[in-house]
Length: 467
Image 1 (cartoon, rainbow, N blue to C red):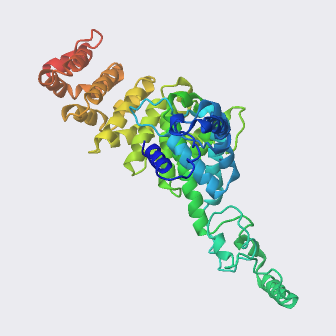
Image 2: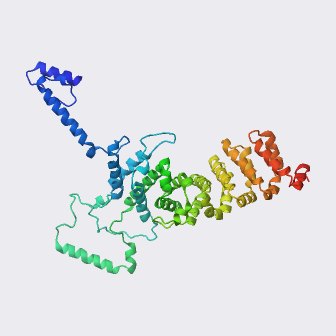
Image 3: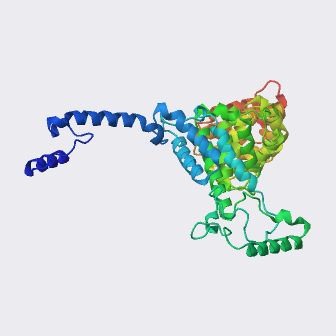
């Protein structure tokens, strides 16, 4: 309205011609002679708008469906390019597309299954960092970077600092004598070096320390995107059956002592989300392998996480084992480590952190249901029964954890060989029956198993009369 009023005032006050019609201005704001021109301009603008999105519309949360495939392809190509600017744009875009709150139901959350080649491209970013993340055992000597110092290859690091102020090559033009002198000096230095000089040299496309840090940040960002994708139900099956994805995350977990902590955390949370659909036999399948990870190495990597001092890591590892054992196909790979798992989980029960206790109880609940041998080993573990009772009597702030601890004890007493061990806690069980109404049913059944079984006459007499 303000533009239209100004146009009228300008046309009425002076003798100049009215302004040319603009796109979006009502037809009544100009004279009748310019109506045809306005219609033509509007038609041209509509045609321009119809053609513009194919080249100007970038990927966003509200991308139009007709351009979704094209923009997804642009993201994959940007990740595959290896260029710093392209990687930054693609990773930032994927972070926005994959982020979703826990209780948020978003229609525009892009699942991984709808973007072909994206998972492989993200894994390649992590693998590129893993290739140069090996610890340097030799102290490299300082030297002048002459090979490729004046060419911007990837944009990582401080290669641009090697360029002159006029952005020209330092050795362009120049005198032939100086070049010959430099060449002779370089040959003399190379002859003076020991035979192992090649182990101290950088490759053609290697980056400096700043470039390594930037590569590391890209790998962490890529792992964060993969972690976000693992929270989407549409991606769980695809990622759990992708051998390259599992090999990469398990290798990051295996090297937790030297790898970036955030990268390890993202990898661990990814496998925890995929655990219900994970079959360890995939590491010996016919699917193409990029990193030689076996089933035993995968379990050993999780055992390393379980024994870690970082609370987030050992809690996630306990939760992962509890979910992984649900699949009967994974039992042959986990059963050899059951004594170590029991010992560590019982240690977690003694921690004051409630989340560590919850993760340990959840894992023990599933392990106790595997077979009789697991029940016997758990009952025979020192402090196992005491700490399970302590979780119930404190009690744990989450009632479900207390209920699972009581069910573990009920499962243990079902084995006749465990009853002499549990009979020593008969008075404690009786106190819980009369004082804790929430779990009285569980401990009443436990007392029944201990004392009132017809095939346990001696145990019954000893339990009732204190013999």
